[in-house]
Image (cartoon, rainbow, N blue to C red; front, side, top):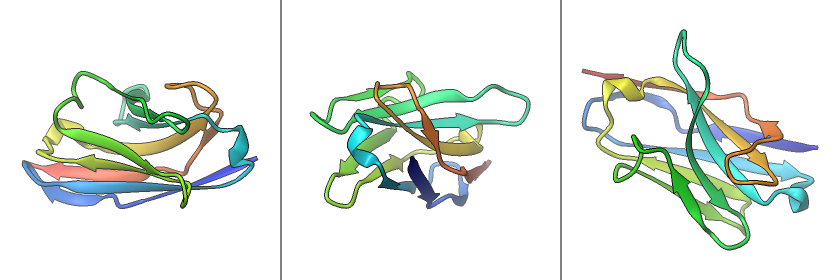
Length: 118
């Protein structure tokens, strides 16, 4: 099993920034990708960004490109999501996921709320 703990959510004004963190523990040797997803009320969970834990390749949804940056600290087994120029439509619960493939998660964190006010 892999345990994921997110932190860093909060309330920010439009145009502001937040950095989310996700710390992994447990059977992390079985993890090759870490992902960020988000879910707004009444909507399905959607992919935001992913990073390979082996070679650092990154992928972003179109709405995140140019504003969000995913990075990792392999020593700490932690992944980050730096979010800049936040917009009200970025308001959601952000979930960290981990799995064997980019964009695919077998394990999930509990989620952290991000609220962007206009």
